[in-house]
Image (cartoon, rainbow, N blue to C red; front, side):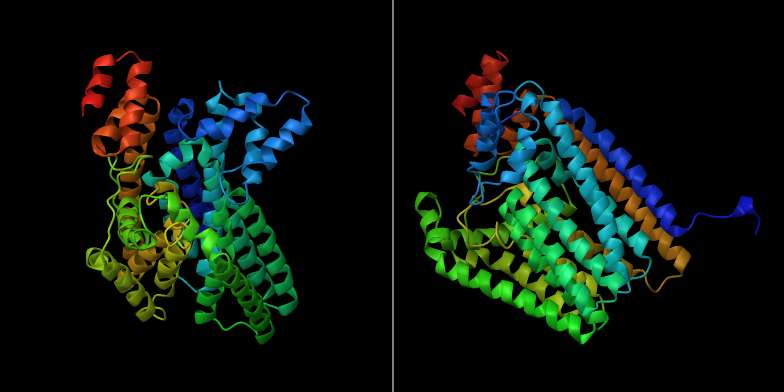
Length: 455
């Protein structure tokens, strides 16, 4: 074969395509970087204006006294404090960092999926990574998370969590799962778990996600006994400590929080079954009009009968994952990843019912599951046919997702139109109506404000 006819290796070809996708995604997001601060940005970022240049005490007081969650999320606040000059007149600088974090996480995901596919002996690991990471990169459900400045907390937590799991897997594969290297892998995992948790409390899920990775790999290749004993004992000890702490603190962590909520513990748990199904639909079949920051009107489910259809869907997914764990291990892995990713924010804890940003990390699991099913479905065809059919479908999906994402990004630069669409889509959302009234008054659209008030 002559030099002129040489083809790029598949790894380079797929990486090149992914970099092109990164560029397209960045181009789609760029117009939204000029949008303003809004809603929870104000209470979280306004204290930045009280930090004078050279005021180290004020700087660290802001970083270490956050109240967004039990940890205070100091790492996220540190990232905002380093951009204190951007508040309140330069939202573009803050949102540019958010976008950079999103792109960096996508690159990290691409690497992680390659490692995971290799470890589970999945065919075409680089192409599989392109499909999963490329689709995740352009998911419309992520737009409001990336462009909402304060959600950097979610972005950083996901980045460090994925960094921990990917690094753990890389050490495992490079060392051949030797027991001595297991200590290094666990230390790396612990470090990233701490960094992720200091960004947002969902970082605690890094450890069970790593345990899931270990489990799915053990289903396809049996690790050496030394590694297996070390890793599972460490995970078991941490899990036992976490469960014990949860039981001891159940009153303060769970029950006490429902005193100020308009729903009970049972109502939240039942309603979250529907939320998980709705999240799945919005991830895979997104609607521009249903994706917004407001879901305070989300309908509660008070009876087991009302939740039964959604519980049946979840049970069906879990059952198929159990049945297909040997034939399509990454399908089972993906379903488990999605459910573990929602274990804190979509279960018993007294948080609000529904938020899109809760899917930033869990959505990876759904895409892995769908990609694994697709790969299994086309396995009977010739390699060229499989590649062409999968590539064509992937291309169509990416174009659709990019178009929907672009339409959502455009709204961020049109606050009145954005709030009008959100209020129209969610007429029972008090927050959506208040935002519309506020923007209408600010832009002197008094008739629209009066109309929203009358409704």
